[in-house]
Image (cartoon, rainbow over all chains, first blue to last red; front, side, top):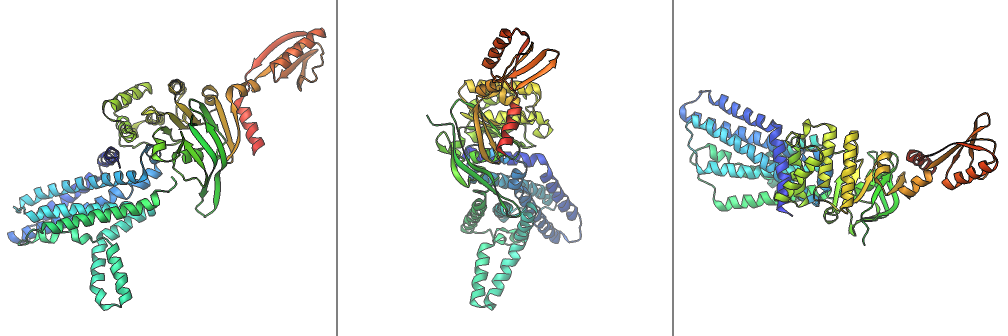
Length: 258
Length: 303
């Protein structure tokens, strides 16, 4: 896999996405919501800080996930529909390189949007004199890994389904997986062995996106930073899960007639 | 020497949304030698684009094999020597022509100064230097086609596979393109292109390959074919039997006749007979035969 190839593919995704300007709309909207809600002084000073952080984490989480799905679910279908895939695949590149390059591009766009959102949020939180802690930085880093996983799921789905169905399923997985996996875990002791095995398989297949969400720890004070080895484990999990999604997409795309 | 393109018993199948299978290409065989300019002709739905897609690896052949300079067609290695222009392609609407060419150049393995020089040269030659920094979405169809041609020429490929290359170009653009393609051929490139524009085929090709309904019909040397299609006409006074020389003979006035010949030799023999019989030649003309008529007749026969 050539680095120059991946770089060229990813750069085109980033340039296109930035010039479309739709990502900026989402970012600005997120900022406005945080700012508008933050101006409501319903609470005392201490409560307001927690409220502002909670709102910021929720809005940033929501919008960055939407951005992750939106940047990745149409990459490959658009390439096929617009026939931009022909001149691309006429080059000496393999289809897996194409997928990896596109995925990297969509992850970079998502991360850029997320960092802009975080930057704007930081400015908004500054108004409430919120202290920035190590765990907030860990929240940002882990969220970035979670977003990469969402991008890979969205792109893999788009190879098997229509773009709209892929986006819908990606949203359901991104927002619903934590609830589903929690429900599976909680109900596992009450079911028979066969069903429990099925639950375990489902738990393994579904992404554990809640692991990447340190929002709760970042919002409430007195949480100590997460140990490095856990962050390392999450990084490994993100890489493995994203690679699996990439592999799943490639299984169909490698022989797909275009 | 390895053929630039070698296709043996190639079959390409598609499945419709209703699950029906149809053969876009069936048992097709042909080859193209290095340095040749070959036109790939056929009516709509003949299987031209499907064949080109199989050569590029966009579809997997159902049977048979295709090779590019001895390498299995469709692999990244085989594509390294190909410049491909798709029949209808869009280029990223939010990139400029320069960015588009830079991306394709980098995918081709070009970089640095070499890539910049090639991009500048192609932008100049193809007349898109003025639009180099505009977004692709603001370019006309013709300008986009030029961007497409430029990307296919990046890296000076040994083989150019062009699908409907003149589509969207105005007459000036077509003429410039012919010069450009001839220049590439003189530098050793092989050209293989499909086209509906028989005039372009006439002006550019050494050889044509004709297919219909996915099957090979015939291949012809363009020079020989044009000689065969050339028509010789004669207008003369005085009745003379031209039996055995032509079937196309008519009286166009009192004692005035018109005859059409397939070969120069037949016409010269007719002139001899007319003069021997005391007739007088009024007019002699030679006209190029129509590739279009040849195309239509051959396709009809093959259908």
